[in-house]
Structures are given as structure tokens and as C-alpha cells.
Length: 345
Ligand SMILES: NC(=O)c1ccc[n+]([C@@H]2O[C@H](COP(=O)([O-])OP(=O)(O)OC[C@H]3O[C@@H](n4cnc5c(N)ncnc54)[C@H](O)[C@@H]3O)[C@@H](O)[C@H]2O)c1
Ligand SMILES: N[C@H](C(=O)O)[C@H](O)COP(=O)(O)O
Image (cartoon, rainbow, N blue to C red; front, side, top):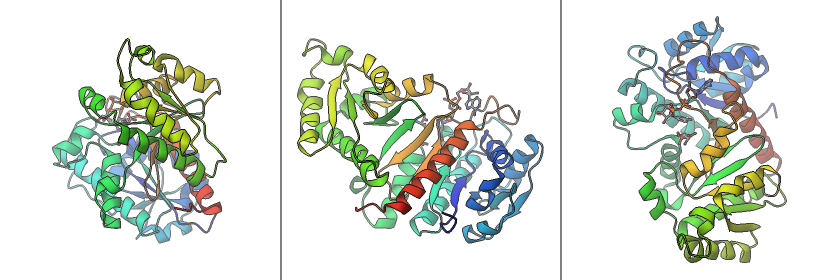
């Protein structure tokens, strides 16, 4: 796969652990230097490198120069610049704006085919908001950039968040919305789309022959035949039936308190969760170290660590790079899978 373009890694919030984790990754994986391009601010990456004891930085004019980067160097395309470095661990509009710019540049490069995938280091949603950026997080920002590139509205490019580790995968019906709003978003259309996008990701994008999808209920005991709520009977079960009629190996609605255990024991490949914390708590409870956040439905591969900016640790050198490493590894694997079996549509 040496002939594929590099993978873009965005620096994340410069006040958080992103820059130091990126530097740590190239210390631990010198073989990735020529396969990646980091998009960010030079001073922020220098500061991150200093936190982990120093890493040489190779400044690039663009992704095409990555292939010549020597092992162990941090391949930086300094296409984003901060007027001043933000203090560690503080929300700032400037850091939010710079983080978003790096993400937009990476997505546009991916859409032009100049990078093979996008891996995003964590940004702070409050910093994005402080910068006046109207998206709650990466997922919605990437969706908007891709839709703009394709000349369609975002409603024509639905995406979903998947969190995964070695033991469990979960895809969310809704993402960054208040819990009351999440309940309203348990609709036939959202269920159908989540099932379709999840099935397509595993079978068409990753080339699996089949994918066993469990669908969690919303209410205690999946409603207990309507005793504790009717969403299972009125919305979720019909969506599962429609999916099965369309050839998707969907099961449910299953009681949310045991469906993750059943998937972890091997009964299902992935669980569709009805809202953010229903799906993310079981994955993150198993530990942040190996978790990967993947956006399904985009026209390019995007992964991210499952943790955030960890402002409490930023600059200390104590942050664990494992989740970022897992995100890069997952992106490399997905890119290889796509190259071996291009999706049919
Ligand atoms: N991928 C992303 O961009 C992403 C993901 C999750 C949260 N966030 C954002 O990050 C900000 C902070 O969120 P939060 O505090 O809820 O979660 P967090 O993941 O930043 O931190 C939660 C806890 O985990 C610890 N932790 C996180 N990453 C670690 C690592 N690599 N090594 C060791 N310990 C680690 C932190 O010290 C903290 O105790 C918020 O703005 C949130 O929206 C961004
Ligand atoms: N919900 C994600 C998590 O907790 O891991 C996180 O906020 C990242 O979201 P984006 O990838 O949309 O920034």
C-alpha cells in the first residue's frame, strides 16, 4: 500500500493533549512518518514534541511530500497558524478556530484524493463554539464539508458515529443533542438510515460478507411489551423488520441493559444505540486506551481517538497515546480494505 497517499492527522485543540500525543505516536511508530501528514500549527506541534522529550519535525509544503519524510520525524504541513500559543488546558476561540481549519483542510484534501484518510486529534467543543463555528463536533463539520464538496445538502449525506474497541462496536442513532431531543430523533427515518449506513459500512466499505446488527431498545427492558414505553413496538421493531426484508441481518429491539454484554460475548458484530450515552458508556467503560471513533457514511475514511482534549493532563506528558495509535491503525486498515475492494456505491 506504499503507493497510496498519506493519511492526514489534524492537530486538534492546541491547548489539549493532541499535539503531544501526535509527537509520541511518531516516537513509537517511526514507520508511520512517510505514511502520514500532520496538519497544524508549527509552534503548537513543537510544544507538543518538547513535552515528550523532543521529536524532529519535517516541514512539508503539502501531503505529496510526505513519502520522503525520514523514519521517526513528525511530518508537518503547517497550513494552520495560531497568532499565539494558547495556555495549556484552557478553552479559547483561537484554538477552536485553528483546530477547525485543520479539519476542513484535511477533509478537502481527502475529497480531492490527496490524502487517503483523515484522523482527527481531539478538539474541545466549547472552543469550537467560542470561535463561532456552528457545528457541535468533527462529525457534523466533516459532513458539511463533504456535502459542500458534493454540491448537496447535508440531509443528502447522512452520517453516523461508531465507537469501537477490540470487544465492542456501537453505532448511534443520534449524536450531540440534548437527551430530550435524542428521544424525538428515534424515528422510522433515522432508524432506517442508521441500519442502512451501518450495514453498508461493514459489507461495502470494509468488504465483510455479512454483519450481525443488534438494535438496542430505548426503554427499560425494551419496553416490556409496551408496559414501559411504546417506541419499541411503534418505531424500532418495524424498522428492524424493514431492514430484514431488505437483506440486512438486523435483530431487535433488544433490552439495552444486556445487548452490549451479548455483543461482547460474540452474538452480534455491532449494536445500534438509540442515543449518545447509551452507546458510548459501554465502550468507554471498557477503557479509553483502544477505543476508536469512526464516522460512517462519509465519502472518505475518518477515525479519531475515543477520548477528548483531557485539559487536566495537557502538557504533562502523562497522556496515553494508545487510542490515537488505534485510530491511525484503523484508518490504515480501512484504506487498505477500500483499495483492495473499492465500494460499489
Ligand atoms: N475526538 C474528539 O474530538 C473528542 C472526543 C471526546 C470528547 N471531546 C471533547 O473533549 C473535551 C473534554 O471532554 P471530557 O473531559 O468529557 O473527556 P476527556 O476524554 O477529554 O477526559 C475524560 C477523562 O479521561 C482522561 N483521559 C482522556 N484522554 C486520555 C489519555 N489519552 N490518556 C490518559 N487519560 C486520558 C482525562 O484526563 C479525564 O480524566 C470536551 O470538549 C469534549 O467535547 C472531543
Ligand atoms: N462523542 C464523541 C466521543 O465522546 O468520543 C466525541 O464527542 C467526538 O465527537 P466528534 O468526533 O464528532 O468530534
